[in-house]
Each structure stands twice: as structure tokens, then as C-alpha cells.
Image (tube, rainbow, N blue to C red; front, side, top):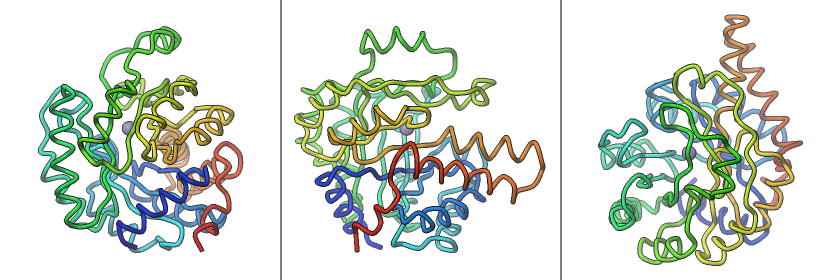
Length: 302
Ligand SMILES: [Zn+2]
């Protein structure tokens, strides 16, 4: 599969309003049951890996996930994406983002995400422009983020309803329009009520808050940008919001917490990786057939 093919798939999904789930690999053995379940339900999705998956959990490295993908994946159903290459990480530290983007491209990832959302707008634009240029030389599509999808920071968040009502962190449609025009980014990750699951301390093992989505705000963002939009923090968003979001231009939905916790809980209960893989397969099957409704999307591409 080529990056250009993934870009075309996103445009097809955007035009016809169907969703591409993106499943985070927190542990290498998760790749196999995800690939099998996608084939079983004829669903197209991405497998993705972010820095916390590598550094806090058991994804090991971009290269290790790419090797496991090469072993298990049928490319009619799944492509490989580098999630969240941060310029500044959740602890406030600068990251060698150029090196990580390059590593992903060299390992054969089909698309990459640069995350400059902790930077001032002008710097986020400048960094994203550089990544669009780097990746463009390999025809690799780029996702960027604007606004603040909260939840990864250490320490407690304010109550969810307070965040939602104040629209704190929501992506501004005016800024989004400028951002997309000036960067030429392929897909934009936006904030409109979605939040990340916790990745540090005891909260990483707790059930995630049930988020809502501001559908009117998503509509404004889609109109302002004209590119496929991405929602991070997909675990636990009820399906009625998701279906409306897809109608408004959300094309990619990231899901991490829910499948990671299924794997961890099954593994700690049984100490058996096969059982943990089975638990992941069951959650993926439930997501595809019930919450996301994405069974059969791969056949739309043939
Ligand atoms: Zn994210």
C-alpha cells in the first residue's frame, strides 16, 4: 500500500460519510487479533502507534510494530499510521520530532501525525509545514492537531461537564481555516468535547469518562477546513454522537484506552497472552459491529 492510496481512501470515506477507526497498539501482541478481526468483519481501519504506547506501555518501537504489521496485516483491510509525534510532550519536554517522523517514514508507515498543539499557533503552523514537506517527498499524508484534546497531562482534569460547557480547548474554526490553508495538511485532528484517556498514574487503569461531542461545532470546523477531520479520544464516546460526527465530516476516530485496558485486564487475570489477544479481538468486534458500525467498509474500496 502507498501513502497516496491511504489519502484516496480518506477522501472516499469523507465523501460517502463512513468512518475509519484507528486502533492504538499499546502492546505488540495486539496487532494480530486486530488484523484478524478487521478481515473477519470486512472493515478498513488503521493500526497506529504513539510515543506513550512505546515509552509507557509495551509497543517497544515504531520498527517493532511495523514488523508485526508486516507479519499479520492484509492491506485490503489495514494501513499503518504514526500517531502523535509531539513537539512538546505531555510533561512539557521538547521532543526530537524530526527524527521520529523520519523513523516512521523509513519503517514504511503510510501516514504520520505531527502534534504541535502545545505550541503557539504560528509555531504549530511552521512545524506542520515542515512535516508536510518532509512527508510529501515520500507521498505520505500528514495529520496535525489544532485545539487541545486534553487528558494526557499528569494530574486531575476539571470536571468534564465544566470543560464541555466552557468549550475549553475546542478548536477555533477561524484558526482551523488558516491552519489548513497555510500548512496544506491532509487531515486535521480537532477538539469538540472529545478527550484522551489517562496514560499516567492510577488514572490509566480507571474507566474513562464518557465524553460527548458538540456536533454544531464539528459542522463549523468541517465547513471551515474542507479536509477530513479526526477525533482523538474515541474510547467511550456513545454511538449516537459518533454517527452524527461522521455525517459532519469526521473520518478517522482514534481508539486506545478501551482496547489497551481489555488487554491489560485479561493479561493480569490470566497471565496468558492468548487470552489477552482474545479479549482485544472481542472489543474490536463489538466496536466494529455495534458502536462504530464499520463492518463492510473495506468492500466499498474494491
Ligand atoms: Zn490523541
